Image (cartoon, rainbow, N blue to C red; front, side, top):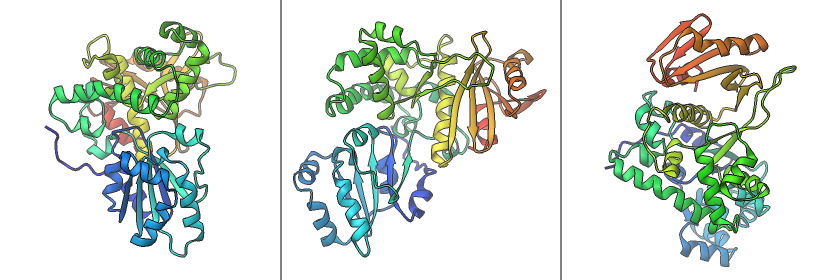
Length: 385
């Protein structure tokens, strides 16, 4: 059973008040359509519906004639990446009509738009990205245990039946492979991509060894590099790079994080936050929440990790506005020793002022010297996300 409680999305006000048209990107099932429909657009065009897709793709002038007939003030076009050429019609309407409607566009593949050299209406629309729920949307009462197993896609987070959630997440990867990869012909080697995707899920949060991943997935290194681009362009995963300090020998290879912990577990067909997995899952959840929260607040955030070749490691170094924040993520009880890597990093770079250990075992906040120890909800609230 899915909880029918309505969760207000943080982006709602920004979309509603925008003087420009909107492009809202995000992976499937993050709630893009639900969010835009809550703005009550006068006209909705759903390009994921095959009948509508065929109508608009076969007659590119149909949209213009429909708008002239209906005279809507707001128009919602869902899955715009399916017909990128429609953006040329939108530009003509926005530029040349006396009272053009405001357009809300949604899409799940920036790659399809970019690959098709789509006209992304520079200067005529604002772009936003929507991911799963963030802690602020949930009143800083994020259910950590459930999130570690099932993530924060709205339908899964609000569902009270674990069997339904697990089936949904099992199907998500299959749907992604068929919908995003086969249908959009992003690669012909779908089987190789499936093996690669599984390998990436197994190595999530680890420093990437490109050659090893390619070998394990039985694909060429060149193919694997292209597959990473597909993951990022379809908004399923993101690589984060090492934080650099002049004179410090840091690891150069990036790490990979998926956009949702539940999707990782679905790919691995393992939803248990067991002792051997909970550290990885919690680190993934913290990353997702920092990024989700920044996207929801429309704040710029740059998330990196720090690791030297001599073994000094800090999970995240975050640039949030003018602040630099260093974060260690721990699944167990926190002692003074757990703060040492943060303090060592600060000695190397005194521009990092705020040090945090985010712990799965803590509630509230406390201090160990200059390091704040806190739970995830408290951490996000403290840093303004």
